[in-house]
Image (cartoon, one colour):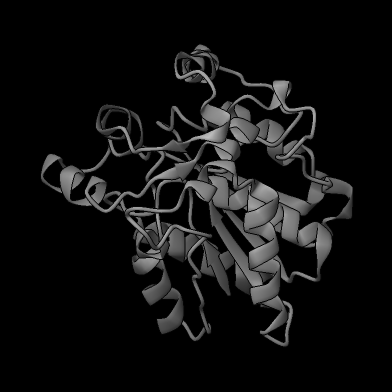
Length: 249
């Protein structure tokens, strides 16, 4: 299994999931995305796109010698889809997935969040620093208050280019976040939090629809975007293990 973390994070965000899947008998790797192992990354991060992240991950997969199961959170799901269209993948677990190019938002919050990015002119070529208010209010909001700061303090800068490719895909003529759904043959499990404002269930349903009967979807009551570490996150593992058993994996 290869686990792919989301924006502003590192492999540490998936430590709990990794431990549980390893205990269930899976060999798990969770490589950091390019520059995400650094609190002070080089300027090159600003112009690093989703395609660059995917290239690095593809090289990692080539070293495994077998078709892996992919698990991606948020932006990590987009990267999983790119990889699944390029190389052989056994199955994909999609946690709070970001919408790819061409899938329109379903909520005013998503639209306003994308518009707000333009308050930082030229952000698509810049390094973006984590924003405590945004993270605590919209990503970590389902965490107990005493845990929010501890998680946020581990956040790292993100690529403006990759952020642009996701949040303002309609302006991206290069279609950096596009996924070739018809080339993805692996089965997919979509798990999203009912309280997720960043990637809400209504938008995730549109994403899953791209894959027809290859996709299984489930909305988790009481959970938000950081479902990988919120109270009750263990049920994600339980649900995923049951599904993987059904896929004979």
